[in-house]
Image 1 (cartoon, helix red, strand yellow):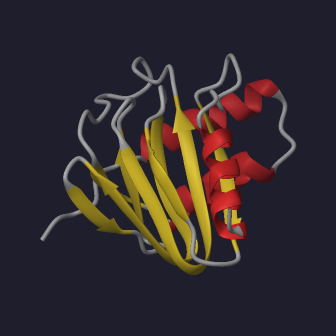
Image 2 (cartoon, rainbow, N blue to C red):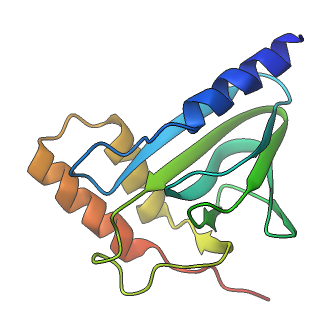
Length: 154
């Protein structure tokens, strides 16, 4: 088994367990990889927003291939099989969401691009890194949900 395969298998095992703590709406996991990495096809019981802080990240889901630059996230609805990979080093971020149906006007039911505005990126990182009490974290997460919007298509 190669070191890259071992790392990918460990990351996949981490991704298969629920990530959103009870009482909250979302959480972000950072996967910083030092070399090209591929994650096998898998699915989550939570919705996922896959995004990047740098590097070349690709996603295959629902018959489409996505390149994920820092200005774009890709929404993957719960239970949709997908696989991701990087070319070289990358800073991959996966935000998992659950229990959001009453907090969003419409939860996307298809894989789609999400505009990752500067405000949304900062708030996602703040949710990941800040030491907040439970009430403040939940308010922050509700604002994050308000900022999730489909990316313009051409």
